Length: 66
Image (cartoon, rainbow, N blue to C red; front, side):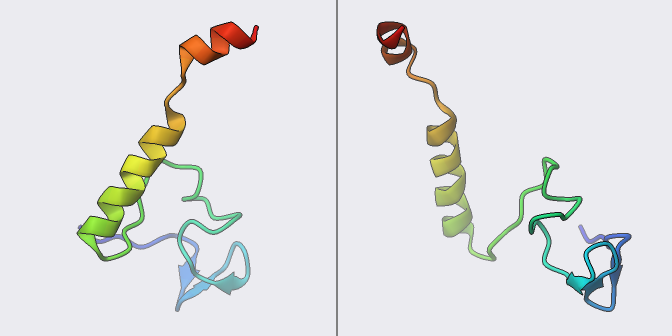
């Protein structure tokens, strides 16, 4: 599936006035639930697993600390 950002004009971001790089600081797509692919399925899979692990909460440790 393809799409075009409304702020992209010839590779330049009209909003940030910089070259268009989806997900950079200030990009409207950065705060969304979009996932940007590196082009490698294995790298994307590893990155997703790392994000899921970093978001897990160890409730036992949290309870002991309070």
